[in-house]
Image (tube, rainbow, N blue to C red; front, top):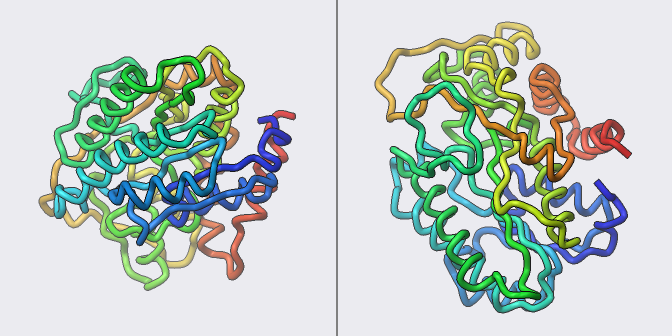
Length: 326
């Protein structure tokens, strides 16, 4: 990362009060960027307000994180999920078209945007998009919308470079969402009760939040410079480092200590893919990105954040930057 690139840079971040958005906003601020955040109640489904706010900010870089990001919530409310994740993304693209100061935009979708037939191979960026559940499908639809806008409206000379990025399962302090593994574990550990875990044998590409955000920032920087880049990037650990839900729950419980534990109530759950891994070779080749933290360290940093009586966000960002290549 060229840290000087972000100094005085005007950046527009949607979803800046969410889990990843909070970390990203803090990091950009520490790097000296001028960040304009756009989150609820300023909904990305409100095109007029979004366009007016983005135009007033005159950003040079847009990073779009705002989303309905929960698989279980998508089953409960598929309409909000599709309108937020698809129409919200279209609205962001429409706003980008209307603001000439923008040079680069990174739109975050999900590793679940791929058509997952259960094969054991890691997904690469050119694999077929799809989704059997509303959340996964909404992210695949968002990818299709990004591609359509890129080719239809944003391909001329002088247009902002628009990339889509797909991160593996991100963990870190400050995630308080319901029906998500880490927050569910932490709530149970704090209450002294066994956490209720679903699909303990499911495998996921767990990675620390700052590794994913480092990828987003590298993609934005390279797009801004005008580098020759593919249109989409995966960010995740090597497929051999994908771990099960059981492993993460066991590792967090051991790090937490005391009576921390979990169990599988063996209840019926909505469908979730059993196996998910990403091929991030493209990010390594074009962006020079590689994960800085292994899975064990990612879990340790995450658990320590929740255990600490003080917020570790800034300290962990500083520690992370110390291990980044100069």
